[in-house]
Image 1 (spheres, rainbow, N blue to C red):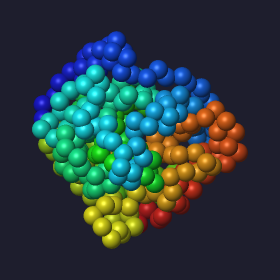
Image 2 (cartoon, rainbow, N blue to C red):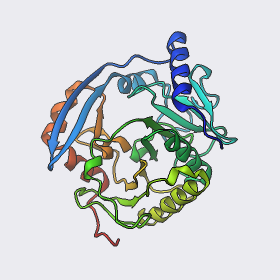
Image 3 (spheres, rainbow, N blue to C red):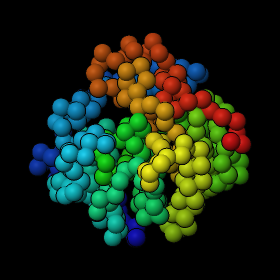
Image 4 (tube, rainbow, N blue to C red):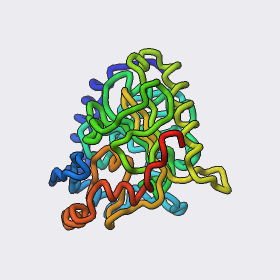
Length: 289
């Protein structure tokens, strides 16, 4: 897995996709809501409503639905990442450059992540700061059964200032400022200079965090969200997909709550964004749990 010019590849792909009509236009209404001493970005994104209406991205667990990633839409192609993964543009973009990292063959979204998955994540973060995120299972906001991670380059999560990783790198802990259940790992500077080592450390952290998930009878894991920046990795177990009637994905735990209707702004304001995250994930355990 070799590094390449990610930003140039995205620019070429977006120009092509726009010319081909493959990207859906984005309409955005944004409000900033302060809660629990932190700032949340609450946004109505027209692309979320389009995703529901178009029916092109089936809900997780709907085994009769078609798979939009196999084959993927060629007009959205960005780059070949490896023998196992391809990067494409998110057709329903929340941000410019929003990528979906998909497996070339079908892999269940709710199955455990593999080293190849984390290699694709490491390659993205080696190229650009930003946020990798993953929704595992319908209760975590997954919209497709086919394995897909997502990356937003140059994105700074609104809740990042509240993320206080353990002082010892790669040691499991939690951030005192975040009351929702999570397991947090600090990533030392320079980690992504060595993709092989970075992939190994990311996988080890993720597998360690799986211990906090509820055991399941089959091969699939209980629902969770994963967030990775150059500085930290966080896993959030999920109890429910929605809070205050709003579906929450991993981006919610980064401080961005996306709405499917502008009517939902009032519900978020009344319930409180942080209370929504606690409702969806449960309350944080003691640091050593």
